[in-house]
Image (cartoon, rainbow, N blue to C red; front, side, top):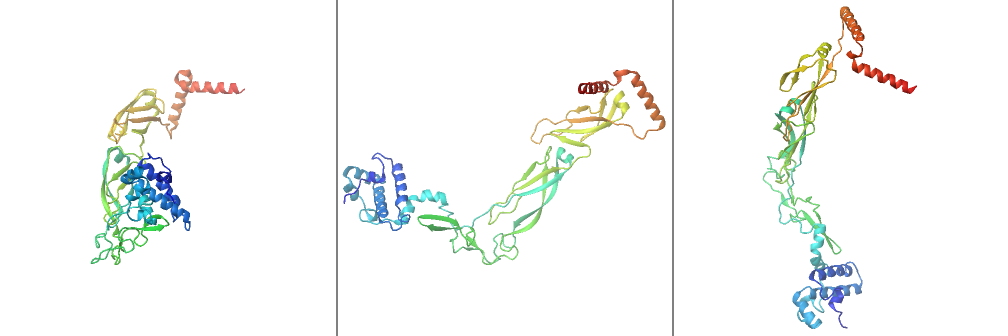
Length: 381
């Protein structure tokens, strides 16, 4: 029986590129492969035909001979099982051509050599609570961190002194095993060694074969100026020790700031409430206010109302990432006198009467508020 044209078998044009030929072969080989069509003689013959066509057209010299002399020219250049009358490589030949595809999907290639798989140590988080003064001005604090370090007894190998971890018999030290599922070759973690590639037959008594032991270490942490609530400071390499010689993790120090009895922070500004007495608010004067750098004198002008803000420039927080320092905002709060004597009460009543005699000019805000209330109720009516 005469053979079909190779280009027709693969379903490509005669000027098809090498990539087009390979793509067509992959599609047809997947379709007709015996593993996907068990007992189907017609599919098996189609696979042989597709494989023969690909072997002829994928080789530049064979393809040139075929284009010039047809099947006779192609067969003259064949040798071995791939030629006419030869068998086909079954799953092995199929996986050769598809190895670059399925190897990417299922992790083919694996780890080379027999070394143990190394693991980076875990990152740690430490919650550090500091005072506002430390956050604004910076500081250096000592902390104690629970962690895991290399076992000194076995030097991190996990094996009892005098013995060594042995190469896993199941995976040959690769840490992975290959499972054949039909024409798929799937690579997975070795169930015997858990992907380590080594087995500890005689575990170290100090660490139980883990190669690491629990411990605590003391560290100095530099708090930069201007850190704020929730900021994190990274200490590289101060996390848990890695496994099998892997690098250590990092330590992240999470900053939390205690509430301050005087100041509260808003961005780079500090805010504080400054109580003043009635006479200072009315007549004006000087009051001392605290800052994180010491005391300063704040001038209170006459007729200051309660809640007025005074800005002290440059007395706030220096941003941790650079920029101008914030300000201190002082909010004055007029304090009502308490525990008055009989005479003081009499004086206040006399003073109140004198204000009423002066009309609206002494209480402009109160007068405008009362007028607004009056209009409100008139509108309701």
